[in-house]
Length: 135
Image 1 (cartoon, rainbow, N blue to C red):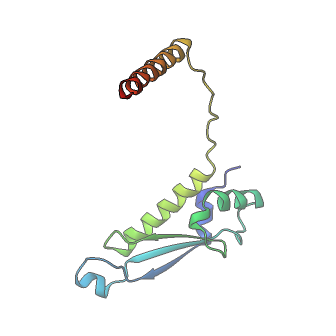
Image 2: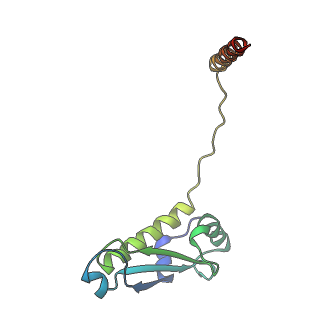
Image 3: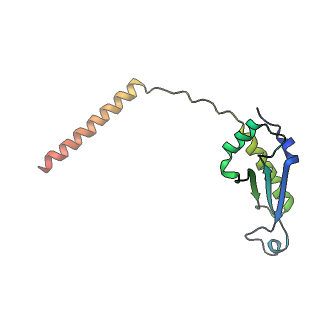
């Protein structure tokens, strides 16, 4: 079952700090880096199954304490970085609960199988001819 992503917004916490990289005085003066934290394990809006699913799919982004972290620092303004982090969070959560289609196994056609085997035989014969020339 998929959770309502926009309800989870009440459990999101933001940390703001100075951004790294180029930007001149703006980097030195303005705190534009935004870090979004969402505590998956202590969420009151998610069921236990949903928590397990999120922890399984997003294991590389979740800390040992069970906090999902998303960092955004590409924009020059704090507001834009906050929006970008929020959008990324919503996209990640919705992607977690998408059901992938099952792969239908296909068989190789008889013609393709025969072509592959004849090419293999030809290659083998060519290699045998090379060895006879060396003797």
